[in-house]
Length: 227
Picture 1 (spheres, rainbow, N blue to C red):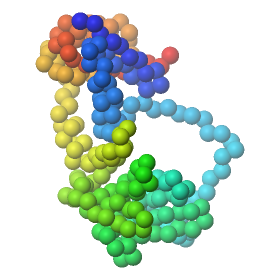
Picture 2 (picture 1 turned 180 degrees about the horizontal axis):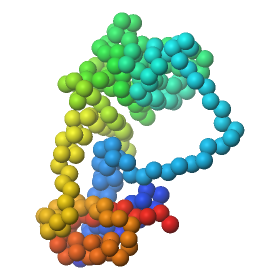
Picture 3 (picture 1 turned 180 degrees about the vertical axis):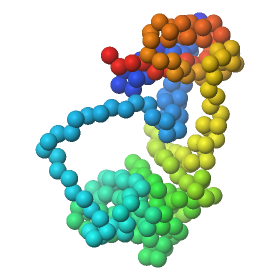
Picture 4 (picture 1 turned 60 degrees about the horizontal axis):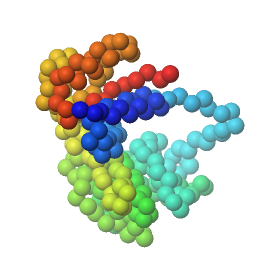
């Protein structure tokens, strides 16, 4: 059966799949990205013309630790902290917590995300997700259930749907990942990834064996060394 191989040099990633299953590749990449597993690591030299500012509690932050940062389309920076949600306009910090913001039922903010309609979604550490829009806060049950239910990622699809990914979903997904050197175990799998060290001859041998063992519809994925 004809297969298509796609190489992503900047991601150190190669994917091989049956030609008729090309449409599954974006879904697979989205799943890997949302799982929290790193696709690549790239170091870029820092230009000397950059300057640094450090903001602490003396400058208006409710605490020194910041869990997440997002910049919204109106230019504000929003910081998640364990003492509330913080908005920064470049000069002044304004913070929102359970006491001064009706509807915000937790000060432990772990993940802010703005969608294309300028809705600000805010994930708390176990108390659910809230929507901040036009100065009002609306609660949702997504992300409730303690620390393991917290929101860890969010994204928007091409038609404007917002997708949320929680810690317990990631734990469930990772529990289904099996690591083995016995290639025969892959015979009934839909997706196989390899982590063979960077020796082209060995890699080619492994892929050739997998091609014999795996079913025709299986998708292969693996790492490649940057040139």
